[in-house]
Length: 340
Length: 292
Ligand code: FES
Ligand SMILES: [Fe+2]
Ligand SMILES: [Fe+2]
Image (cartoon, rainbow over all chains, first blue to last red; front, side):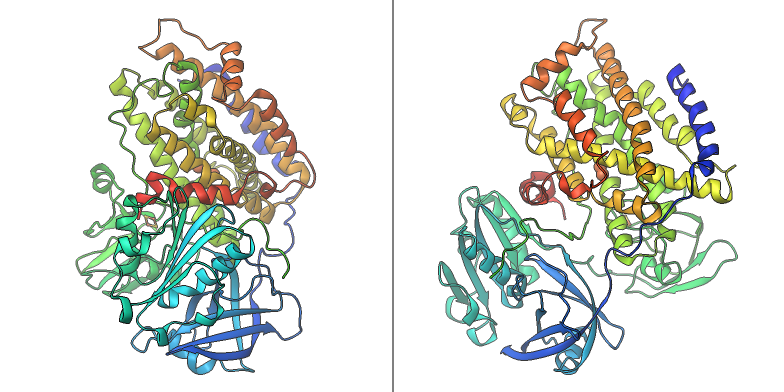
């Protein structure tokens, strides 16, 4: 079936691959792409009700990696928790990073730990910065922030202002007292719009001033994001930027077991975690990507057990052949034996 | 205040769950331009198999990558490539309804990535490792090409002028934008295993010509089997020059110049294309915006 060219290519590749060891030894390029940084808290300020900002520097005064508006840091807290917080300082300041955190008492405990433990003089390990909310530094833009969602937006607004972009900014929140950085906003087309005074904004309220064929950047609580995404089609702007967060929590899951290969270790998957998360703790090199059941990279073959498929990707045939996407799919109790 | 870097960088990559509906796609989706349509259709013939092979190869390399940041990049990259493969596969699945069965050609492509470049169980030890690294270097070379095509398609007013089917144009530009967005990953992975100039250049010297030959064969196949063209239709070099002149494909000169840049000792993929432009397109792409 393969034509002459391909058959020739196959012969060439076979000889070539066999001679690869003769063509010299691979030499790894030195150094990781990024190192974890151990930073010292140099300042802590109350910025609003339940919101503190934390300023961090290296202890030896060396310059920090550069960042661009929209970037976040990955904080490795002493308890072992890992949390991402947007950088909200000045990107031109290479000596320190600033984050701001709202205390959420009934959350996972990360924000409480930041509030209580990260006081001046304390150290914290961070990774990054990484950017999951990149900002395009030209054209016209409407910025929308809700509450603590101001953190990635503030550096964008200031950059837009400095770069002479055509920008406007709508900042919402419960009440003025809960909204941080009101005193740091650049003068210009800023609308501070607390719900207490104006009521909860509709999509039309938020997007009224969207620039024709320009961009909208939004960061805020999930309902606000949903409102803006739903109403975006009716506004004049053409580009919508928002940060995509971690996968949604498991809904209606039951605990079950996975076994890594016949006769392999058995792991317990609790009702509120995915099989993938549990497997990763055992096998850090396991492949995955979207964690939402659409990319297919976490596909494994199920050797035994009944799968409750929850993905949007596999065909009926693939399922019948025993494939499953372990980032979302589960079992209704019982055990799945995976080919891992 | 000192200047900002002019491009966002250190992007955290993630796949976008795009969907396309091809039921209304005409055979010649660059209207009246069968050559240009088929030149770009070759993407659908090559990419599903090729990008799945990227993912398989990277997954083989993944447990050997000790650098956390690089591993994160690889995971994001694989998700994007897996979705790309699926999206182009959707177009392939649509072609038979237009009277063109792509399987004689895609079977050959599949054979390349399974038989020629697939797992070779007979290899062991160092030979096995060097074979993995060689494939990673091939992927880096091909990713230079996909990034250059991505950059081109994001800057291709000729396709707009020709009233290219908007859904197809969105697929090409969404894919092109993600190629630009993740253009450093394969190169970083290669360097993580082997940073030697010789390795990188050698891989391009093999991958470049093979890709070119497969592309030409692909256009020939499509034109010969397009039921809407007279039997025996063949692509001609002057079709290519004319399409390039009207901005319907990159010009031969620009392709050669870009390939030549890969041979510069100081090459790094971020010198090509613009992350800001890619990010801007992804924020306005109808498919990417509708994705979760
Ligand atoms: S990680 Fe994408 S489908 Fe599971
Ligand atoms: Fe791709
Ligand atoms: Fe790619």
